[in-house]
Image 1: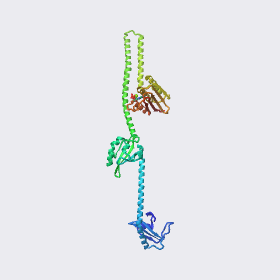
Image 2: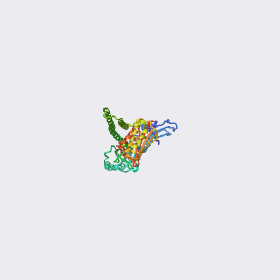
Image 3: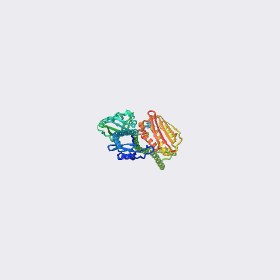
Image 4: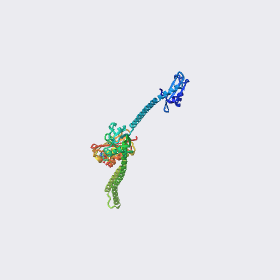
Length: 459
Ligand SMILES: Nc1ncnc2c1ncn2[C@@H]1O[C@H](COP(=O)(O)OP(=O)(O)OP(=O)(O)O)[C@@H](O)[C@H]1O
Ligand SMILES: [Mg+2]
C-alpha cells in the first residue's frame, strides 16, 4: 500500500480518482525513467460511501484485462474499503490528537514566557483567596518564592495586617458571587514584602471562572519609585512655597531693621551734629561769649569723632547690605576675614584652612558663597554651643570649590535638617542649587555638625 497525495495522481489513476470508476488499459503506458514498464493496467477506486479513499490497481497481466478481472478486483476493493477506512480514521484521529497536544504545549509555553518575562507581578487566587499562580516578577517584588507563596492566603501574605482583616469578608463574598467592589478597576495601595517592608503598589483586579469556581487575577506593579518622586516633588513644592514667603517676610524684616538702624544710629548722630553746629553758629553769630579757640577746637574735635563714628556706622550698614569686602579683597580672603571676625565676636576658636589662593569668579558666585558661609557661622553661634570650628576651603577636585565648616557642638539632628521650617538651611541649599552646587549637612548628637558646600566652577 502506498500513501500518495491525491493531487499527485495523473493519467489513468487520476481519472479513476476523479471519475470514481474502474478503468483499465491494455496498451503499454508511458512511465518515468527507472519505473518498471507497464504493459497493461487495471485501476479500481476503493469507495467508502461516496468518497474514494484509495486506489486498488494491478498491472502487467500476461493476457489482456477483461470485465471479469474488473469484477474480481471491485469485489476485493469492497472488502478492503471498511478496513482501510477505519485505518485512515484512526490515523487521522491520532494526527489530530498529536496536533492538539502540540498546540496545548505551544500555548502553555507561550503563557509561561509571557508571565515569566512580565515586569508586573501576575498572581491568581482561588475562591477562598488562596494563591494558585505566582510569576517570577511576583517573586522579585514580594521576595516570596513560588513554592513559599502557593496555597497561602493572598491577603495575609502581601498586605498589611489591618488591610487583610478589613477585607477578609470580601473574599468570602467574592468566592460566592465573583463580585467585589475593586474587580475591574486599577488602584493604588500599600503592600508588604517578605522582609516586612511596606511599599506602594498599583493593582489591577479581575475575575474569571475555572471549573465553575471564581478566581481573581491581580496584576501588581511596584510603584515605589514613582511614589517617592511624587513625594519629593510635593515636598520641594511645599519647601519652595514656604521659602518664598519666608524670604518675603525676611526682606520686610531686613528693611525694618535697616530703617531702624538708620533712624537710631545715623539719625541720632546726625541730629547731635546738627545741634552742635547750630549751637556753635548761634554762639559765633551772636558773639554771646568770648570765643575761646581751645574750647572751639575741642568742640570741633568731638564733632569730627562723631562724624567718624557715623561713617563707620554707614559702612557697617552698607557691608550688611552688600559685602563690599568681596570686591576689595576677594572671596577667600573675605572668608578668612569673616572667620577671624567670628572668633573675635563669638569667643569660639575658629581655624581657617585653605589650599586655594584666590578664585576668579563672578560676583553672583562669591556673594552666594559668602552668604552661605555667614549662615553656617550664625547657626553655630545660635544653636551649636561649640568651642571649636574648622573652616576648610578646597579646590582639589578640578572644577569644584568646596567649603566645609565643622563644629564640635551639640550636633544637628536629621529631623532638623529635613524640617520644612528650617528656612536658614533651605536658603543655603537654594542658593547652592541656583549655582548648580549643593549643600550637605550631617551631625552626630554630642559630636558636632558639618556643613559642606560644593560649587562647580567655570574655569
Ligand atoms: N551647627 C548647628 N549645630 C546644631 N544644630 C544646628 C546647627 N545648625 C542648625 N541647627 C539646627 O537646625 C535648625 C534649623 O536651622 P536653620 O538655619 O534652618 O534655622 P534657624 O537658624 O533656627 O533660623 P533662621 O531661619 O533664622 O536661620 C536650627 O533651629 C537648629 O536646631
Ligand atoms: Mg539659621
